[in-house]
Structures are given as structure tokens and as C-alpha cells.
Length: 55
Image (cartoon, rainbow, N blue to C red; front, side, top):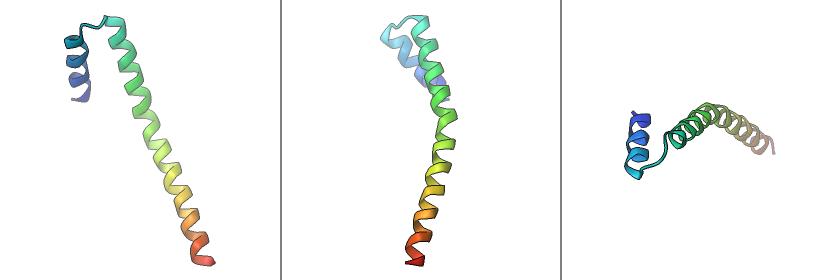
């Protein structure tokens, strides 16, 4: 659904098809990175919470 929304915006802006491919690639890369970054954030916050409880 997000892809179709972005595709509609790109077409409304009159961008080239290559721009749409680039934007799609960026969205896929971000979608793949978000879960990894979120897990690392949760892991770090759990270490921080553990340190505070021991102190």
C-alpha cells in the first residue's frame, strides 16, 4: 500500500521512471534496516536498565 502511495506521488511530481526505481530501492533498504536497528536499540536499552537496577 505504501508503495502505491509513493508511486502515485512520484508520478504526480512528474519524475522519471529511474527516479521511481531509486525511491523504491531506498524504501526497501529502509524497510530492511528498521527491524535490525530496532532490535539493537531494545538490546542496548535492556543493558542500560539492567545496569541501573544493579546500582
